[in-house]
Image 1: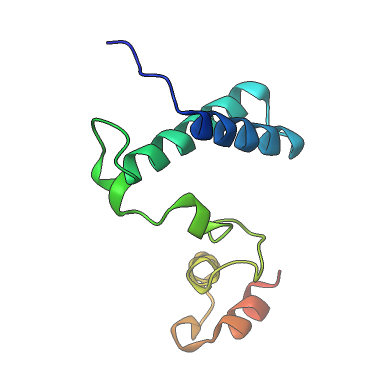
Image 2: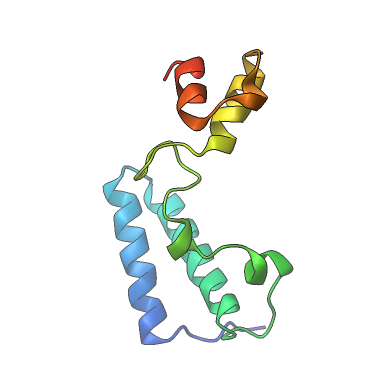
Length: 108
């Protein structure tokens, strides 16, 4: 079944994402795949595609996510990420720690 062409907006979005990933050192093939998946997910969220998975429509959008899953971002790792790392390192008392305490405990 042939894929319908993306709108001009989605083409620009794809190029923008792809170029950004390449600037950050991703290979061209990987950048193309991530960009296409991101655009397709955004199309599904906004009702532009015929089919959409449950995760495509209920997950937080990539624009809102903006680094929450990475180790960098405006505030670094999330408390959940720090907690999971503390759990792997068997840090005692981790369940009662604040985000700042978890950061100190995991040592990064």
